[in-house]
Length: 317
Image (cartoon, rainbow, N blue to C red; front, top):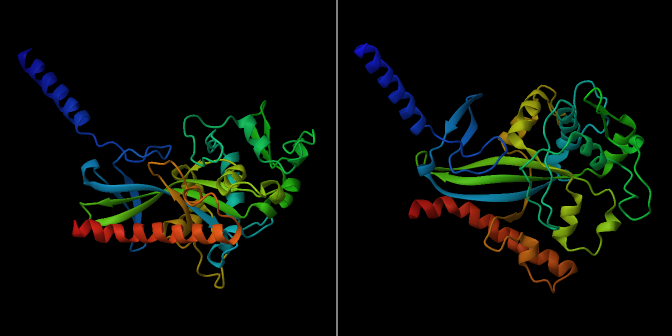
């Protein structure tokens, strides 16, 4: 009896110790930052999971970037335009297929001009079709209400199925030219290098460019965000979908490889800061036109150089 009691005590002690020293994840399943991380990297064609300890993260910063598919390096994200290609799909078509399969999507902040994702609760399925519609006249005050024929996805609540609408896609995709990504850049002292991890991605849709004319830059950008997707939730779908090859059909890459190897071109729109403002909001509000664009570009270059010099500065420290 005494031996059994001792054995039970030892088992309980070991369970409590393992729970006590369990390493928490830096990025949880919703992409929130906790200060320990897990990231996948390519190594000799394979992937290796790297577990980062909280105490080893000496520096971290959340960054927001815009990926414009009109840039040469990003063409492959846009093609093919047709939704029925038997072999290849655009990134947006891949995203819609993932949503049909049940991938959760989340709303942007309720504060006008604040582009940060709200990862509190997934967007209800019946709400998704109202965002993905090509008839925005109701939003512009004409009094018209978008019907299912204009919606990219239609939700059947009885069958719990999200149906794809080919007719609406061809109209919608012409204006789906950009994405915003949220990423965390951090320095791990254990590995003595800088890491970058994309935590969320949001498609933009400039379906009515004239509607945003005259608006402050961030308000216009805010209005074009459709929804946010946790990047890790999207990765399994990207890993199965090959991109349209550029010139050599024998050199194919998946969307997951494309992002993991950072083959895309982007420009920075802002970082987390004490003012809670993005770059266009930090430059003078009195500027406009070409002067405003030059001021934004100058500040973007300054922040990019600051991020590039972080690793060297930490080594000197």
